[in-house]
Amino acid sequence: MDTVVDAPTKTFIQVTEIWVPEADRLVLAEGNYGGLAAFEEATRAISFGKGEGLPGKAWAEERPVVLKGFDGSYFKRIEAAAEAGLTSAVAIPVFDDATLKAVLVVLCGDDETRTGAIEVWHEEDGLMMLDDGYYGAARHFEWVSQHTHFPRGQGLPGGVWSANTPMLFRDLGSGYRFIRADSAGKAGLTTGLGLPIPVPQDKTFVLTLLSARGTPIARRFEMWDARPVKVGKETAAILADGICERDGPLWTDDTQQEPRRVTAHQGNIGKVLATGLPLVASGKPSLTEGYDSMVALPIYDDGAISHIIAWYC
Image (cartoon, rainbow, N blue to C red):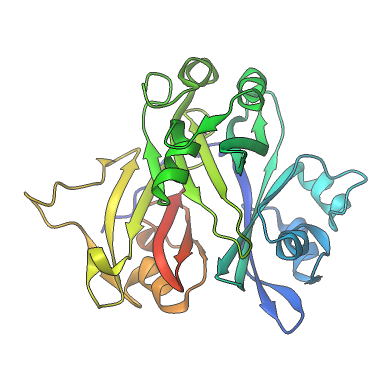
């Protein structure tokens, strides 16, 4: 495959880290720091106990955690983050039943042009309610989101809750299925990815990533289905849905064309299948569909990976 070089794009997420348990600590497995060398250096010198810092809090509380400001908080790298221009973060735990496999942490900066949304929703009294979210400059959309609740099956959070599978929404500003379409269109939001976040307790969490044209969360999204009902007994995954800035729709009508399929150890998605861990890859565009970097996040169900979500910047 030819390596494609695009003009630099200002992305919504600036840093992505994967923390994995080692004895009673979380240690850094890998990360993409986008050239923020001093912050990377500060990060490599630390680890987190249960309840310590943002990764440790997601581990201890067994839930996704949004932190919209670092000053005076439990965040451990406040000074280094301030120097790097990082102002907020979201920690996403990856649980296989009661076992913590990893914590994915994404960090963002804040300015007048950086627009997008990373939201955490939870079920309460039969509705999906906004737990918290980071929206960058999309202030009105943030206000609308704080005052919107979703019944089961409604909108992106309610749809993911009902199906218990990831969902990809296109054309958010005009999509009839996206309840907040009008405010999303005004904020420039275009693509929405929703995914269930399984946790040990009997609680329901949904993570949504809403991407804007000018400062995209990603320029390519992929949704891989690894359930035996779809792939058989082999450890494998098929590309069930996706959208790419360059290649357009990535899904195929399986009555006309077999969907793309990978097995364990085959490429980056196959590596996630084999290890059961999230993955961050950068520096080799030939391995990341021509983009600078990718993130792949496994979702577990009933003791096995059911889906893998990948995004590319």
